[in-house]
Amino acid sequence: VAICKPLHYGTLLGSRACVHMAAAAWGSAFLNAVLHTANTFSLLICKGNAVDQFFCEIPHILKLSCSHSYLREVGLLVVTASLALGCLVFIVVSYVQILRAVLRIPSEQGRHKAFS
Image (tube, rainbow, N blue to C red; front, top):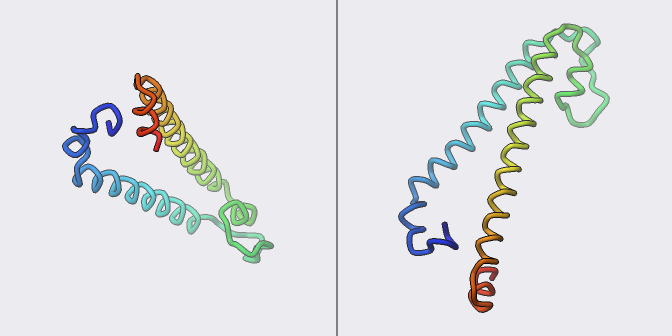
């Protein structure tokens, strides 16, 4: 939008849209953290509570679990990874479209301005 329709950028992406995007990012991150925390506290730990790592990360806690509820955590990790991969693909496709739009600018001076 900023390259193809620069005069419409302010109306298409106003402060309200920025607030909505930030709230969606923070909300999804908070939901992800709450789900992982709730699932971690529901695990039954039967191999002691000593973790051999400096950081107490989810995979190391799952090794201490003796219940089958660790499958929920693995499922949460898979969903989180797939959502992150989807976001990465969306960003890469967006940048490719921006690059294509810049390369279609007929003048070299215009392309130079768009790249800078």
